[in-house]
Image (tube, rainbow, N blue to C red):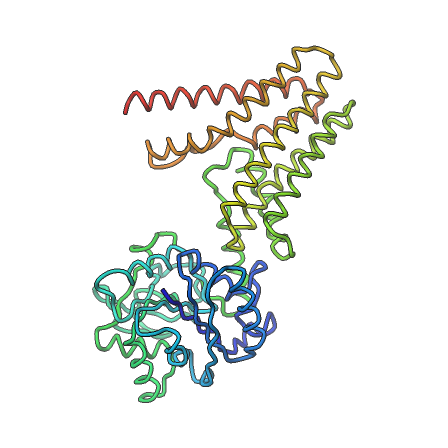
Length: 451
């Protein structure tokens, strides 16, 4: 599947942020890169990007991006770019070929599920001449109602399109599935009526009953995301929306949900503007956890309290690597695996440090055994977490409403350290972690018996 990205326009309303407009950064990632990363995650491997205004810097960035993502990005010069964005379709015809292709705007952000839905329709036997993803949520708060292109529908077909359209049923999201019929439609609209925009071409096909709509809310997802980033105000709305989507992770425990996540999101928002990668944050979090463990092992309440504060800080920072990866569309299997492995090491070191602090003060061998129970219970809890969540999804169609895990464990260490009750904290971790593992075994056993 090939994808056309018209990126030739001037974008004067964002000129004070960046020129050309497709390179305007949103949380550290240029707009056009966000579009390409999203499509690549949906399985698109070939891109045709049309260039016009200030083409040199955009061409250089795309060349580097192609190597980083392992996709093909062909830059096509559009000499007629000032006439309208429909001319990009004609300029890229040799690149796109005569089969179905996607069109994604360089300044319209859509989510992965929307791109996947369009790709699926391209693989269906009845591929429409043109399919436009239409947002039928007329109250969408991310939409600039003064500037948005409106669409009128009838039985899944587009009957009218344009800005200021009366009686509209939805909004043009800027995501299309098109075929060779679009080339001729652009020619007719441009040469015949002087309208060289994609909207003009859609209007031509709609008049012939050949333009269909993909209902974003009904056929893709009720919470599908998209936004037209056309000016600084829209850039701010997009940033707020993307950051807001980090909240409410299903596997968050109570401490993560109510304390860590609100703090980590604020921190991640600032980190996104810096040249730091998610994996670098993972390593920094691990290093902070190791430091916390070493300080916890030292004698005295001051060292204990300092170690507890460092441990809780590492717990907050632990959410930032995943958040940064999601904000930048840089999630990877390796990154998730590395984070999980280093978390287990950090957990073991933290509890070992706390155990040594308690043992050094008392000299009681029983306290070493208590520490061992805390460590093994924590590891068993982490090991069973994904399997337990999978069981809950299989039985109830979702995971649990909350998860007792690392956030609670570290928070207990933090509070116990501050209150100078290290032994009580160690005992509570050992009891809670092992009790939760036993509960999960019981639930799994009941589920197996009922199957």
